[in-house]
Image (cartoon, rainbow, N blue to C red; front, side, top):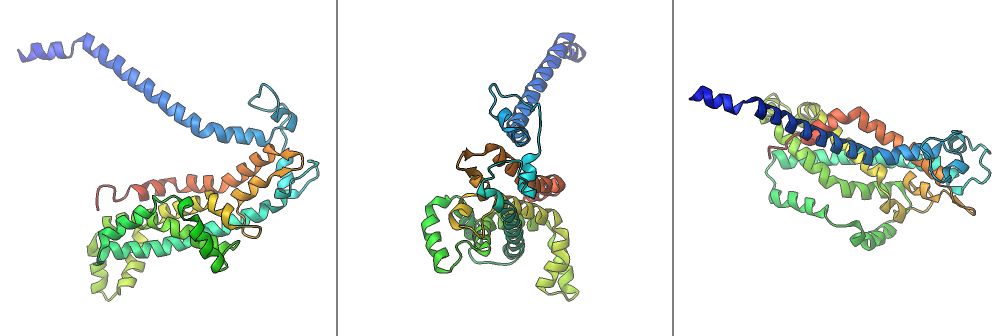
Length: 304
């Protein structure tokens, strides 16, 4: 009876239906993956094409994917100030400074977030802190507050302490907004590390800070890389606060690109060129560190 039941269960017809079902599921999966890839990559590809298209082809109707006469004139105009483009917007002269400002502000914010966030997360993960759970959920709740709600108090504070249009003012702001996420990621990561390693270091004469620096930090590479990438990319892409709290000296690249306009109108080709140049550092960072970013963000997902 059992063999007969097995025969009907794995009959050729049911096996064929199972193969068709798997094929349909695979086709749907591939379609979804293709749609997601298209939605993510198409804007960037179109931006690259726009940056190398002559102005006449950029405004051609109907638009075509690749220009007949691609040109690098806009890249030369930004980096070399070449005169191939007759009317260079004022924003072009500020572009390289904006690029340097973004590098400085993003790097400094990353450094502050990694050091302060790691130490706070270690204390919350290993020491007895009154109201620890409430504190963790409190800082997480602060992340849900829209920036626009507190923009006026922030503006008053920034003016009072002379932080408007200063790069360190933006570093202070960005660090404050990103530290809660950094603390949560590092807290979850520290919980995955065995306490016995620190106890052994303490028995051998290490202080609590020494065990953190000599034992925990070397083991926390993926977590530190993940929060570093998160802090750098978030700082690099931030636009709203940079627009509000900078005027001329500390403008970042995201703000400078919006100034690519002249008396003849907005130069969308130059804006696309600036966008391509500005997107290179975060893309390279994400590609180089993707393995560590995934490992660091998923560590502690089922613990703590």
